[in-house]
Image (tube, chains in turn yellow, cyan):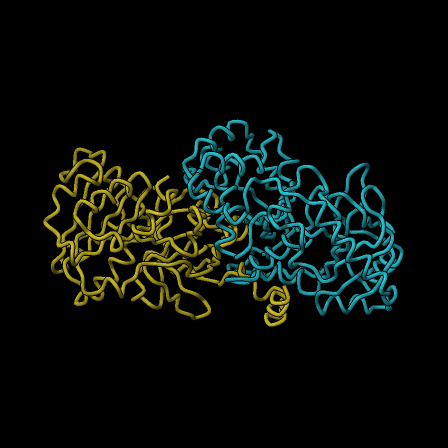
Length: 289
Length: 350
């Protein structure tokens, strides 16, 4: 307890050090991606670079509506700006959808632990995304492409419910053109124009060329029902569990490991995650809830 | 520093603090029960109380507090963090609640420090009053180690007379921190203790030790291991069948610190505040995310979560048990679910 007081003295408490105080960010541009998702291009007006790692998130504030945790979908190689792909799913995100270029919002972060890109470097990369899960993965995918020489082969497996719900379709061609890269798509419910694979994401594993389990890292992001089955697929590829990364979604309200909302068993996703290794998830039964 | 003080001295000390502009709070009798409340005169404080319905945590971590204010109008972000200005003097805190304050200090002081909690805590003074035995049959503080204050207090009052059913009038006041020494030095409250006073205090402590008995059939050190073996026990479902998910246990718990954050606009909607409010892991939507997926939809998974936090995970994270054994949750439960019973039954089947 005396330590707490000493800390209070040192901090010179008076609200300025509030962990809830957001930084101002300016919306530089808004683009419609699908009927439900918009892409926001942002810049911190204080001039600071966000300095995130792929897989980290920010708490986005729209005063009057509140805060929501949103994963960063741009690569950290873009230092001047950062991007958020926002699905209209609640109060805050609906308010965000009503904003336009020039408007200012609040941002706290980057928060949590992202993908360990240093450890991944030098290896082949298998990306598996389901639905909105492509947003955080895009940060890592574009990071890998911006450092292409540091990575081996790249496979991107991406599934959505319908063709209309596919995100970042305008970047697919650029991804396909990258050397040693394969993009494989599937939709659960194809329409008459869809000529690709149909079915849930696991069907893409049947078409996946042979991967070398000794030099492949996996990054999975998607809803629980998706990653449960995808993780089993990656296991059958004999890839070690500590090289399989998965990002977990929870509603982080404070972002500093206290409010309890994002807790999975004994870990706070906002601090220890959102990116976990499969080997960690095995001791977190709630991550498969 | 030690002083001998009477109940009257303590009331006068509280009045001095009030005159100095401090917020003074402590147990206040309301009909048959006691509640921690801010008082306007020291005489309203009760030092000889059984238990307070709620814990004193609300004075450092209020059920609702403003984190920042905002205004809308220009396209700029106009937010101003709000600094709490009250650092209360709380007089009359039992050892279990002192330990709970110690846990909250660790929680809000570690990692990214919580300015809002720390501002309230910074100049606060906690005057503990020792208890002579279990305050209620629901208490299991002896098992949890909650009946001996380890931290979270500045002055400890040891009753020198009175006892079961009889109000104490004199106390040995011992400062545990610099803040406590300052308080006791203020107007030189009470008098220097005599040899007989120290003996009486020692006698009280001896009697106290004999008055508490264990309720769990095992030592609490074994609880984390017992829980480890009980994650998939059927007991969670059997017990949670009765749970109404009302969150009463969360509400009265001295160590619960989960919260939610939301914006509350003024009528004009041109300005407003961002507030933090207590939340409870037993409430149905606690683990629901945007889009509607609930990661703990069954009351059994929520009950298990709470018990694991209190009996294992908080200990792993903060080095202190997440439960002090005050018994409030058992008393408050609308479905008569008992944590002690759960702890006992788990050991029987584990």
